Figure 1 (cartoon, protein in one colour):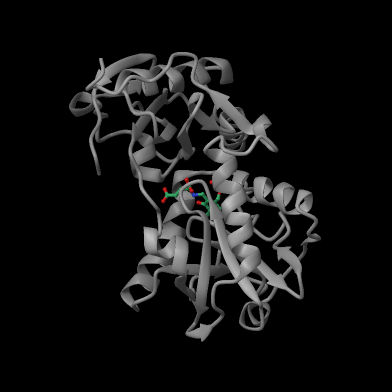
Figure 2 (cartoon, rainbow, N blue to C red):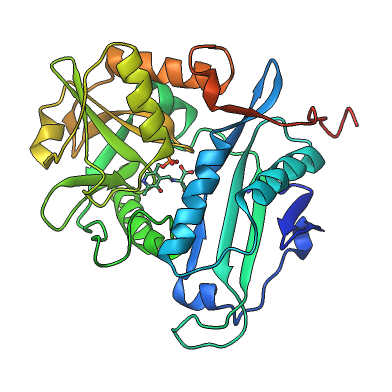
Length: 311
Ligand code: PPE
């Protein structure tokens, strides 16, 4: 990964190399952490962090689902994100707030452990490759099921949940595919390893309902609103794997993946279609401040970001 200058750690800016934790941290042993992934984009009006407040609200919800009291308010974390962007001088970056049960007692019950809160920022290019954004990626239905609602609360963006994603995407990569799609124990379409999934059929757009063990994606919510404003009908309902194979178009959404077309699933060719590309363009134009239509989602950094060369 590309290192940057500073990391925000429990209220202080520390050098990248010094942002360390003890190996006895609870979160390391038991995956008892929560995190966010947020993108800051360079726009004509300066750096804008896309839907920052909504991401931090989801972080707060994730904390509640893990019985965790966050020691900082959303407002404090929002300021910390902007401060970090400013000191690292990156007009465009990925932000990774993470909070976890820290060093104290070991033993599974997380009682009395301190909560560590950290924010990293670094440049992160196209998640599934530049080529993937244009030509689409090849996905495989995973043999791993998506964690169920009574296994780990899937609405929490919890670190431990990502063992599920790691198994699925690693299995897919080892078999020569770019990404995995996970089904629920009941066989319903859930998520990619780090994305939500959309299916286009007969001019209408379908996506799994929030109850299908998906992460309530902020890009998913954005894309639903954009698609509706563009005149499409969007239906949230349970989908099955054959819906993918007979789809006109399939795409994935996520902060990191943005809007990425799927050109094949389990080697069934789907191809990249016009509705996916229209929504992708509207999404990227919005995030980059090139479209006024959905400008309510842009949260501008208070200080103009100076790249280190200008400073
Ligand atoms: N489902 C999963 C399982 C998921 O991890 C993400 C985000 C989404 C859906 C989409 O959520 P949203 O970003 O709010 O639209 N995955 C994040 C982490 C990726 C990583 O590799 O790390 C991301 O996209 O930032």
